[in-house]
Amino acid sequence: MQLLLTYDVVTTTPEGRRRLRRMAKLCEGYGHRVQKSVFEITCTDAELLTLLDAATRIIEVSDDSVRVYRLPSNGFATVHRLGVAEPAPHHDPLIL
Amino acid sequence: MQLLLTYDVVTTTPEGRRRLRRMAKLCEGYGHRVQKSVFEITCTDAELLTLLDAATRIIEVSDDSVRVYRLPSNGFATVHRLGVAEPAPHHDPLIL
Image 1: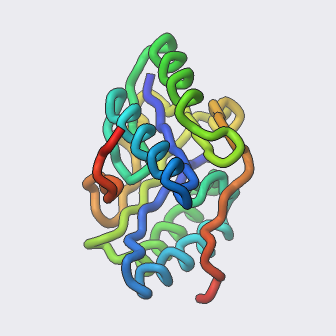
Image 2 (image 1 turned 90 degrees about the vertical axis):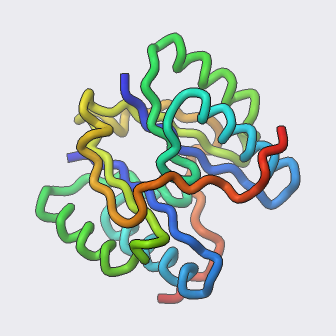
């Protein structure tokens, strides 16, 4: 199935910035980064459960937010895009 | 139709921060903010064209990115959510 995963992580603390980097690293293992905090993911139901479990262990549930939307089968192909098409990574170095 | 709109706006300059505020304001007129740069939108094809046109006039196409995904008819109801459910607005005051 095709999914769109988006996240907000509060980065006002070093711990938050670490969570942000860990979320990015996790999601990069599952899909294609299309914006800083938006990933297109193709996976099975079982893989989604594994991803959600890992995300739950990374985020601070009282501060951060992760949302996963199921798209139609042609969902990635029919996106309307304005501006730059390339993914924009977070600027912090990746330290996990 | 149900849509998910996401944006990345480069905010390293005052102009970029102004674009970010204008994009947020535009999208708030069309839908529900679920994350800082993610909106759930229900609109017609004509309204989508108007929205895309307005967004094109706000963003800097060489720096920023807007993506609009069409969701299944039950797309908002079937989202997987982790962490905070409330929308997290940008912290800047809204000055247009």
